[in-house]
Amino acid sequence: QKSAIIIDSINEGQEFKTQSNLLLSQSGFQVKYVSGENVTVDFFKNLPEKNDLYIFRVHSTCINNRTWIFTGEKYRPESYSLLQLADLIHKAKPSLDSGYYFSVSPELIQQYNKNRFKDGAILMMGYEGLDSNDLAQVFCFEGASVYLSWDGYVCLEHTDQTFLALIDALCTRKLSISESIAYTMLTIGDDPIYNSSLKYYPLEHGYLKVS
Image (spheres, rainbow, N blue to C red):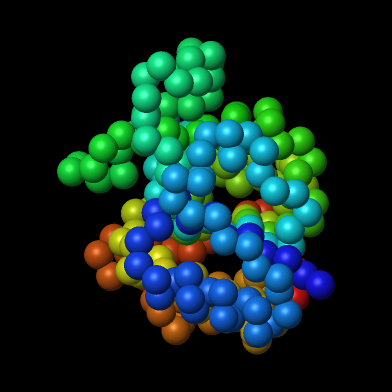
């Protein structure tokens, strides 16, 4: 049986959780959902291995060509001091009026997750997940077959709608990566505020299918 894991550090609203679980289970996937404060730095140091599909419902950002993923763990200056000194993790705010959370770097994921993602597809829902290729390269170097994300900013409601359509295209309709993105962008469209688009890496893997 195929397996999917949804990693949801945002943990807002129920619709995405309900609909994604339904789409995936109806397509024959066994689904695990990890959310909120369970999405810690330590969790990212030991990501579950050998899933066919990894869906990251997370905040993310790209600074100086480094793509950072926000955890659901609140920032504490005294925690993970060596990782902070090594610039593998950082404090970050998902919005101006929120508190600080830990964010993790591509280097942390690569250092602690060797060969972890064997032939899995990575769906990164946060913004700027493919503004730079650095995070995509890390996941693919450690075994992932393909990585899909946004090339710019995106609002939460739009990324939820888009990735539900993408899951439907990949898993229910069994389209290829490139066909699924084309179908999703035709159905949902670019982000209405930021005009961001879905991309995938590497480009030569557009023919692959998830199910």
